[in-house]
Length: 230
Image (cartoon, rainbow, N blue to C red):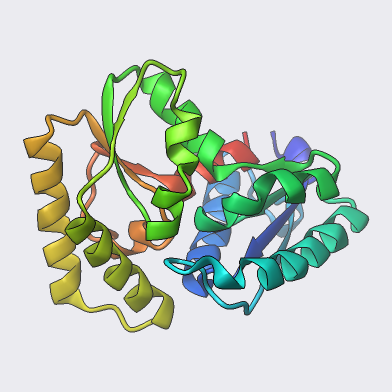
């Protein structure tokens, strides 16, 4: 297995936010080790570009300028012969079709990775916690449309609470009280709607819930890492 791993070249465009993309790198290394990598030369080559751009978590006015920056980053990774390229941000997938075309079809979608993981489990009703832009852009709603899985969107109060927690994680100064409040409200959301699973549809959310392990949560970073190294 290790001879296959070290022939892979993976590009990660991160920085949205920085700690989430760092966590994805760690997960890729852990997964490589699990699959047989032992020495430094056994691991895949991974390029991580942490890009400082204006966020569009709840305001899409900066999308046009951000798309130009990300297009250049994708072009650079394609020119460096990355076989797989991923963006460590769900919300940035509003640009995915254009970026995938620039990459020559090398982009791995975190949305599709999550969808495949959920449908493989074989559940019928799942919830989604994500940024306001991810939800209003219907990224996950479109992905699950023909899967037979009912996708439940939370109310605005939970969406806004998630946004606050996400911004705290991006700052590197998480608020533990806010983490607990979001966890409790997410569990309430799950129970009231009789959900089989809840998708953590923002790469910061696995960091928010890092001290709470549950097989009822679908970690989007984990789904992406499995898709990138399989």
